[in-house]
Image 1 (tube, rainbow over the protein chains, first blue to last red):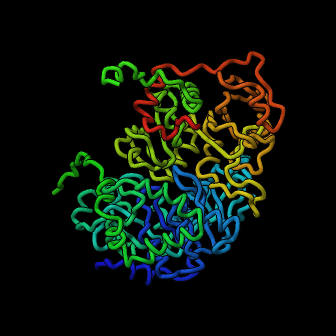
Image 2 (image 1 turned 90 degrees about the vertical axis):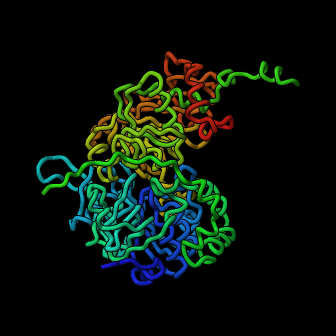
Image 3 (image 1 turned 90 degrees about the horizontal axis):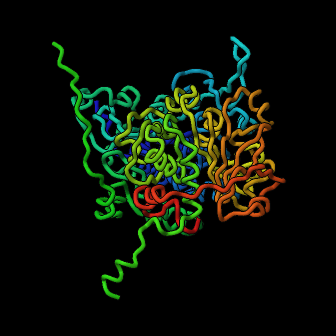
Amino acid sequence: MSKVTSMHDAVATAVDDGDSLYLAGFTHLIPFAAGHEIIRQGRTDLELIRATPDLIYDQLIAAGCARKVTFSWAGNPGVGSLPAFRRAAEDGYPTEIELEEYTHFGMIAALEAGASNLPFMPLRGFIGSDLPEHNDNIARVESPFDDDYVYAVAPIEPDVAVIRAQRADEDGNAHLWGIQGEVKLAALAADTVILSVEEQCSEETIRSDPNRTVITADEVDHVVVEPYGSHPSYAQGYYGRDNEAYLSWAETAADRETVEEWLDEWVYGVDDRREYVEQLGTERILDLEPETAYATPVNMGEYR
Amino acid sequence: MTTDETETTTETDTERAYTNSELMVVAAARELESDDSVLVGIGKPNLACNVAKRTHAPELRMVYESGTIGSNPKTPLLSIGDPGLAAGALSIEPMRNGFNYYLQAGRLDVGFLGGAQIDRHGNINSTVIGDYDDPVVRLPGSGGACEIACHVDRTMIITPHTERRFPEEVDFITSPGYVGGREGRAELGLDGGPEAVITDLGVYRFNDDGELYVDSLHPSATRDDIQSKTGWEIEFADDLQQTPEPTDEELRLIREVLDPEELYTDQAE
């Protein structure tokens, strides 16, 4: 059964005020279009969970959607800091935010606990660090078998995860290639999953290369087909990162007024991702296009 | 000026004086060995690894936090998850596998870190300046840094030596160095530890007690430059060396191949 819908309807159905939310993707395939739709629909009191909050959570924070940020590295990758995150963390503007902080490994382990239905996940992490003193969901535990020890993290189980992939069929069986990040864990740990893709494909295409499947339809509630839905981050093989957007965010977000002007122009001022892409313009989009480089096909064999 | 005159007066690109940024990259590259597996960061660490791979360490294996193994990036990287790290890699692991099976399990030899504060024992703070619950400056946080500092054999710290960056004790330990000295680190069950700190003034190492000392001075730096920006009385090696200058080939690689736009090695740094 087709789950294909618009981002507007997916967000309207799946995301409520006060929800915990994981927009997945480590640098790659970040669900920017979903984040913008959540801002447009005026969701508030969200717990924003993401290893790397990136510009998308800075924008959600600047728009006043957040009450809490759960994270492991809150910077602008390759550029510097996240100005809106810092204003909220340091000055409580525009909202006070509670922070729940991990290391990348700790954060991913907590997602795995959530995805695996376990009460905690052990890891050799946080050793010698001050982080466990400031997060009640990190605890030292002794080995039941010898005198070794590890740290444990409690499960992270978001109400909603939004994940992106390059392509999926109408039911939500999805192919992802390139950096996989925490996409699968986030989807498996969450109650409700919105899957957004660059393009729709047939089930036959999915079945032709099952090793490339990141998530199957059982785990997916809504499918949104949205080209350029990860801009200004990237989609392997489709477009590169729009570095100008990452660089200029440092200036845009440094000031409360310019960040509101930016939200007016690029989020509130457009109806959907299509209008956003039209506003970006052809030239900017074409500049992000990589040369073509196909992987060598594999022979799965036909067994009769 | 005629065209001919222009051509004869143009210097080749390696004749320009090297910058301290370039010296830092080269000093870091020389720490690497050919059979090392390195967890690479963007910026100077990535340049250092690529210089090493193209000179004395051709077998160097480059692994990135984003899960790419054996990456062979052709252009300067914009972020730790750059698509150029994925295209042409030997393998791409989900984030969980990279941290779990590779870093935690001890499969990586070297990791590169930076930080807002580095202290006498090589502990790194990239979390907050001031009080955790009421920070003066909220920094990005650990990312992968804490577990890199826990699990690689040799941590390399690359950072400019600015005022206040080297206090006697960091405000917050994000990533452990020799916590409580070398013995303290061993008692926590951690092997390895910080190997070198490479700044724009010199290369520093750690003595038998796990305390930072200056091993070599860059040609443009003095002892006083370092001491005046360090929050405790820092030791200098008895046989204090001068950091070897970059070779023409190393400079050519940085300027023509690896960072032609001077994203990470500009004159200002």
